[in-house]
Length: 278
Image (cartoon, rainbow, N blue to C red; front, side, top):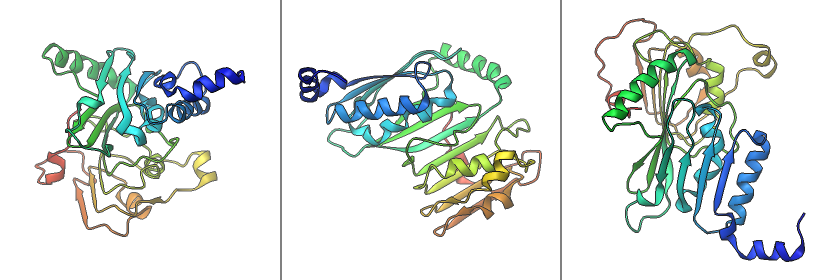
């Protein structure tokens, strides 16, 4: 609680709340979400800036998801260094074409890797950085679309609010080795957070595992994707599981490639060739 005078001052000056510091180490996930929503409400229609301090890249999507619906007034985002990853800063207002409104996060590209694989990834990133090609978390898709790319060790199973993305690319580790980092039930739960998907591409082995106690208690979730039109499954061993538990009445294109094999051969799918690099 604050005094009446201070409450009046803050209610009449939304610029007080235009700088939002999201620090995962200070508060619980629930309180962090409430604080983000509070600042968004109090800042009203004023442009705001976000500074993110996270323990790992696994929490980026969860911590930033409250801000994506307000992308039209999200001015900038700075991400503090996480481990070997350097600080990152992006100015969204400089990405959009002049006069364009209704900006939104259109595409999400996620690579799920084991923590032991991060050392090799860091080495590749440092080499890229020397050549001026350090990978970015946010990439503009003009005139009003944004792409988010991230490397994580696990998928988020819940989000504060549904993601309004229409395209999702998921890769389970590097394609040169046999990775099984993603549990099919976890994938289905994550897909439940993306109800507006129109295109989904999954690349990875993925095997059926013994059900965990929580899986037995909650059951296998049904991912409802009423707008999904294109689905690509590449190198997976869980095709039947995924097709059985994804509800997609508008599906028009289904690509099943390299199923149940542990080697690579020529790919002719146009969707895989346009997958953005991370």
